[in-house]
Image (spheres, rainbow over the protein chains, first blue to last red):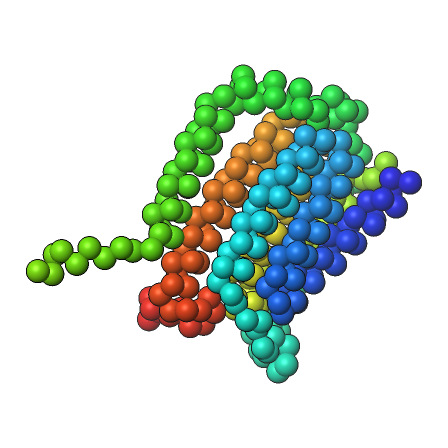
Amino acid sequence: MITYFFIFLAVLAVASALAMVISKNTVNSALFLVLNMAALAGVYLILKAQFLAIIQILVYAGAIMVLFLFVIMLLNLDAEVSLFNKFRVKYFVAFILGVGVFSQILYSIGSFSDNLPAISPQMMKAGTVEAVGDVLFTKYLLPFELTAILLTAAVVGAIIVAQHKVRTESNND
Amino acid sequence: MISIDWFLALSALLFCIGVIGVLIRKNAIVIFMCVELMLNAVNLSLLTFSAHYGNVDGQVLVFFSLAVAAAEAVVGLAIIIAIFRNNLSVDISKINLLRW
């Protein structure tokens, strides 16, 4: 049962990722990426990581993708006209390169795949909010606080970069 | 139970789709979304090994990676808006000010 669930989610994730890359319309791309994030959250649930599955939906599919959609709507982009109309060497090279990287990774996975068991039974406890929070607020307290500083710096930086420049015109006089 | 190399293969496949997307697309926002896809693939890989060893550290690393991805998305979109304001396009073949 859980195997079929995994196959369904994996096919959904790969198909939505491909659709995201191929789709001409930017808004469609963003919505396919949301679907991909949701499928990945399901995969996280299969891996017994409940906390991160929820965070994936909340932060990625919720916050970040809404930000993307806002920017897409704000910029009022028109769809790209020709993505696959004419054959280009660049696409071919990109495809070959992607297949090359994929086969390298599969080869390196295949070399140790015999000695990998399934999910550890400890994971039933380790994936809960309690376990993650327990480690996050004791062992990783300093990195957690640094994350807060990082997010603050990112917000300030984004505002400064994106704000409209108001010319004062006083230095011209 | 599913052996974990299937999860790793899914992660590798998603990462490679992201790489191909970055290479062939010209719209800066779509390229940025492909980068997010690659980040997600690596998160899945980390989480798979975390589940394999029953260790929480991998999940904490995924948590930090999520925070960094959020910060990166905010700053990157701000840069895209700033570029759009200057030359009214997010087509990366038209953004060639620094190209030699």
